[in-house]
Image 1: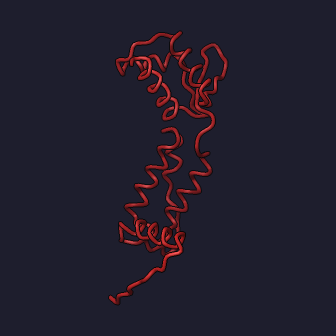
Image 2: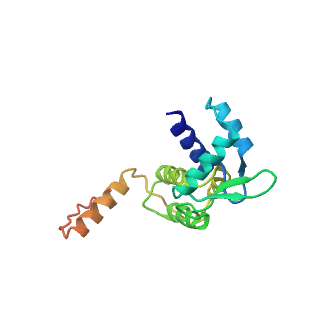
Image 3: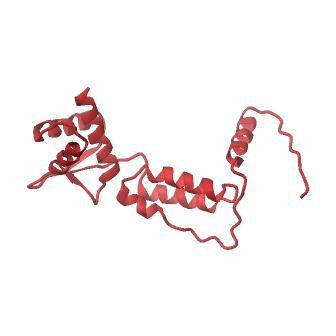
Length: 159
């Protein structure tokens, strides 16, 4: 069990704390493992990094006196996530609170260093955001009905 938790810890560390501009050394990985009370040594960490790479994770090694490691290929590239964040912020039917939650979730798809770049404020002139916290469930329900060729009925109310 120790080997699996160490391997998962290293993978999590690489995903959340490394990127192209912020690589991490085996020494730094060992320090973090020690803080987490996971026993290891240089050889096992190097082997774990190789196991991750052999199993499809894009663990990039910049060869130097102290090799530098980071996750290269991620689910989304940073510019793609910036585009999604801008779309969420500009959307009128997503509430301000839900926008923040969605942006926080998107921020977890990049390293902590890159997530700062996603915390930007898009300016939209005279932007009005919905107060309805459940609107995305309604939109999903509408999409499901449309895809199932179901008839949709609306009830309009005057305020």
